[in-house]
Length: 336
Image (cartoon, rainbow, N blue to C red; front, side):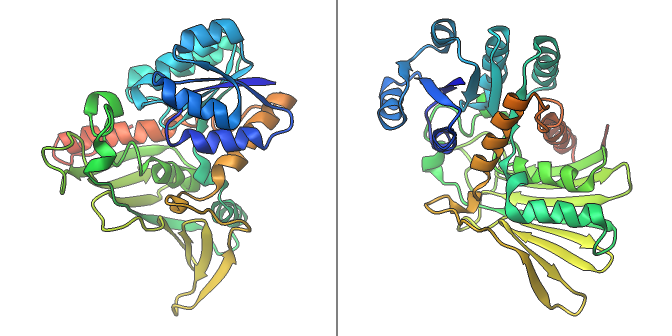
């Protein structure tokens, strides 16, 4: 199976490494508007070099395309790839507007091709085990969820032409860093959201970015479960994401990829930890990319539907869009 990748920035490395590890997949082309980045990627991972993705699609006719570009380009590039008969694996978010999400979902249905949205945190060891334990009811039913994303992003992170710009990124911490945790909230709740209430602020980069760096989001789901997310990129370091799943017998605590059970008396028992730990400056991301991309290609080979498609992957988009509406209206509740 021949695949191509558009956008050779920092996140693309995770995709290249996952593609390289698959025996049935060949990287035929890489594309970036900056020739130096495309050349560096091709030198390390292979593939022909392009600076125009439409030319790449027309010449290479890849079976699948990875999209690792700025947020505002996800939908138009995915639509073009689907029209050319390619399967699409896209970095989060699936879209940054309701119109874009609807267009992507419509194109997925009409094209007959698969769309995958990259919510790799679902594949972390602890998240897998937490989902199983919730479904089995091992520690009783889920009562409520509390989550925290405390990361650090300084001026240098926003020195490019799209990060921190509402028109291109679509938002700040919610749409970029905390979207994975928003996805986990609804994934663990296993129920449609019925309302969202949110507050956002720019606490430490006024005059540098025009999006939020801090947010508080409260969600209610149809099954009665409530969830709260605190997220910021104004913290002093990049801490592991913490998700507390309050169940009848105690707390299932996800801290990064590790899962523990905290009993009412405060004793903690480790239930799952990764067999392979991530390394490098962004090790707090975890190791889920490789697992998720491997599953995407397994689904393409078998014909099974990939579970995180434009519809499932779009649920987090609906959540952050509702959160932004709520914050813009003074924290008013937004109903689904």
